Image (cartoon, rainbow, N blue to C red; front, side, top):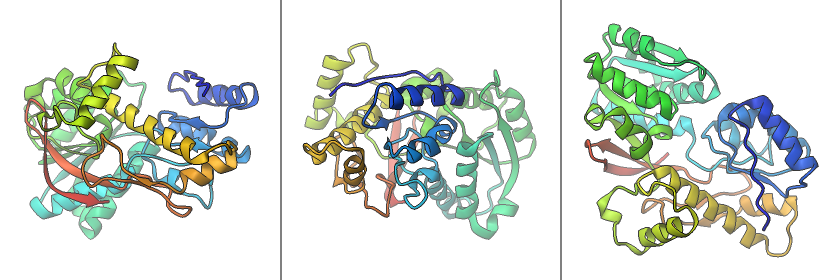
Length: 325
């Protein structure tokens, strides 16, 4: 395997430039794990027209699970909308009179989560969602948005942000004395890169969700699966933080790519790569118990299960059932 990596700087025009170089000059078999909704949207039509697999994109937008329109694009993680519907269900079960404030990134990523929340709340969405505020990825801070959301009188906060802004939101909410029930999207729940930089005390009680094992959770320590992951980190990513769940994510996606290639055998064509990616049914060592990677020609969402968890100040504590989102 010859692995070619290119940096798009999280800039859609740069994503287009790099994708064309990889396809037309490097002649890659497929492109995998491009980060972000907007960068992937920028190259989705081009890759599908060229019949180049756009595999396991690093975003949970619902558009990655549309084999009728985009047969060469597939997601990996649970969709943003299905995750938000789980939070909505939990709010209805535990806080039926909640007044909800929403902070979201002003793009398809943010809107996908918001739509899922609205769908999950159903006819209660109108009266329950009392405030919304957006931010741009180029904004230096989201302080003013947090102040406006607090002023709405909301007692529940749905935080739809990427890691940098998630840490800011958690910290700012704590500093201004706003203590709503805080729901944080799974995109930004890494302990090492979000929760601790925000201040462990600021995140106590936040609810999020997951489908992979938190490397800081002591219940996994010493298990064969966790030991194998630590060995992989020591051998291949010795400079990486073993507390960071993004490294577990990367390991698990890489194993999924490996499975697709193994199923391809010697037929390493782009059509066969997609055929095998659409016929997966297995589990991975660092997924939560009960979570599987499963696809079909009509189902391009490999992972569709997750579990809620609450931040203790030291780490995440899972609770409740596994939701088949």
